[in-house]
Length: 237
Image (cartoon, rainbow, N blue to C red; front, top):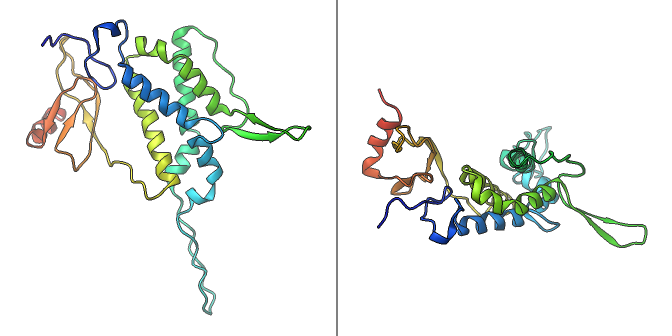
């Protein structure tokens, strides 16, 4: 097998001969497009998260049991995950930053973001319902329209894909607490040497219950027996 064949910059799988000049495989492009579509729209995951409101921000209910005295309930804990998703550095802000990076490289004028962050339905004077895409929906449209370009030019497509996948998993978990997203722990940068004498540098993450750690960029794999060596390589004395 020819080990010099190009790999997808996102999943590191081999690219097909007819993929040239793509640097992202068709499966990763399809997955990214699917995740973008899942976030947008009046019934999309982000709109559901917004309309769920306090139900996803406050776990449980206050103790409203009977009994005398002047006992005061403690403040409800706030679920930081959904708050972060809805906040300035969350889903909308992250997608808008990707738009800004792509547009800068393409030489396009930066968009002006107006309106609600999420999709809303309004009733016009005639009594008909009218959909109004939000800032997230507009960002999703831009990103989907430019995905073919990104699959040929963006070396950081893997990070873009991981952002999307993370948002989809986190929102689904927030909307349905019975869904537990896979636990992954960031452990450091990949120390695998490259052909030009530098280190790969991809941020490695691992499921504590997994038997191996794999670098998404270079494809290097470390089994549990190799983890001490990996730690030494990431943190040389």
